[in-house]
Amino acid sequence: MDTSLLVWIILAPLMGAILNGGLYFYHVKRKPVSETLFSIIGTGTPLIAFLITLSLFLDMVDGGVTFKQQLFTWVNIGDLNITMAFLGDNLAIFMSMFVTFVGWLIHIYAIGYMTGDNGFGKFFAYFNLFLASMLILVLADNPVILFIGWEGVGVCSYLLIAFYYGDKENVIAGNKAFIANRVGDFGFILGIVTLFFALGQVDLSFSSLEANISNASTGLLALAGFLLFVGAMGKSAQVPLYVWLPDAMAGPTPISALIHAATMVTAGVYMVARFHFLYSGIEDIGIFIAYIGAFSALLAAVIATRQQDIKKILAYSTMSQLGYMFIAVGLGFYSSGLFHVFTHAFFKAMLFMGAGGIIIALHHEQNIFKIAQHRAQLPIIKFTFLIGVIAIAGIPPFSGFFSKDAILAAAFQEGQYLIWGIGMFTAFLTAFYMFRLYFIVFVAPTKDTVPYVYTSKTITFPLMILAIGAVFAGFLNFPAIFGGSHLVDTWLAQTNSIKIHMSHTTEYILMAASILVAATGIFVAYKKYANFDVYKPEDEKGIIANKFYVDEFYDLVFVQFSKKISVMIDKILDMKIIDGFIMSTCEQFVEFGKKVATIQNANVRFYAAFMLVGMSAVFIYLYISLGL
Image: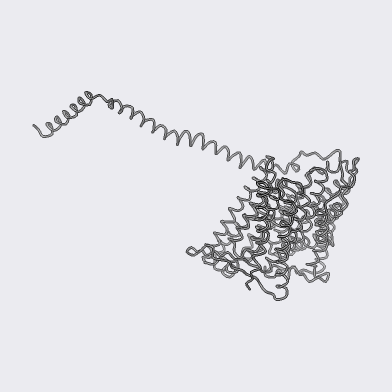
């Protein structure tokens, strides 16, 4: 079914970006523009996108329709036919619903956070563009259009991470994110090309790809699936392309919330789910994805236990939770993975926004021990932060429990006991490091307590709304053993996701084990940090605190090696060999020219004598050759 509304989900925030960009240019060049006007445009356009998505969702519930809108043919060369088209099926609308809603709340939060900033209007222009790019990615009808949105979120992440470009470190962080993602994106585009040649067909739409997937050889499909996942490794910060994510915290906190909750990092999980018809037929690649997810989840959780920057702790928690999502989609439980994307959006956005409120109250202090030493009284943030910590730790009935437990049950059901064990240990670490963060920031004794700090309603309102989602969102996929109907699994049935089918006894035991593991993590964190001396912070040295020196290893192997290769090419290959050969040849021509120039002396008598010698030589030659 065609509808003209579909494209307006994208156009609304895109127009917001254009309007705010134009107003900011006018603001700088002509006359100051009110922050209120920037705010109305910046928050109004995501709200419009959400309302349009909601209306389409309601139409789908009533009529069971799928929306598709084809705007024009973009490329038509030989066998390559690419249309600018958008698809609003159950998967796309599911993603669009919470991307626009959570994105809208983060935009509201950004008003309070960015108030008084010289780049207020520019920030909202970038912010709207970021959301529009993510919606292009989600609603794309073919992988080429998806790649446009894929690159769009990459560019916007660079602009926002390096937003305060006056600080060199911020620019380095932006460059790092951009370059790491280009490595992944190179794999992604190669995957699309491989898939195109493997199928040998004209139409690149997802429906056509799915219909013709059996025409390709298993080897080429496996190669395409692997290359596409390389893109997901970069975009969703999985091993080995995860190193950009912690440094991305250099940007303003609202962008951290948007990247981690509703946009960029979830793109990889969505992409794998969108290509479910491909990955379902290449189980080995799926298992590979699941193991990458498990190892990423564990590595990030271990590193988070020793971090002191509040935003970096949350960043590593995102990487870890993304690992769970990739376990699910790698094993073929696409709806379970996407359900965790959904619940994670609520509590992770809330945690980042709460962290931002703390950072503002303490004049941009981000070290958790220094935050504790000068604790600000922030009752709403403290309450909502606790909800977020409980949710991500996986304590029922909070949303994180249901979505994460489904993933652990999936690994156990499929006989992937190593992955299940890694997931359980990571669950323990998650509860430990998140409550470590909470106890240090809000509970541990301190001598200096800052009186109640007024917090803007544009900061507290989104927190309270997200807190409701963090508590109750899990009930949308309530397990059948508790009388639930798995609404999310049913809605995403098109992904052909594997279902949980095990005995109730086994399921109860797995749930109890999950709760026990999380409770143990909380208990250990309480014993160690509830009464911790925040004036004697933990040592920042050590292999875990220094992130296993992966950044240093990458710098040595890739950056420094590339520099040495570049120097060698410049100093030896270019200057001594190429330039040396060319310059030597040129010098010989110059010397030859100088010698020839000696006969060009403008002396008529010399020229006459030279001609006489030449003519005499000719006559002598003719005399000898003719035998005269």
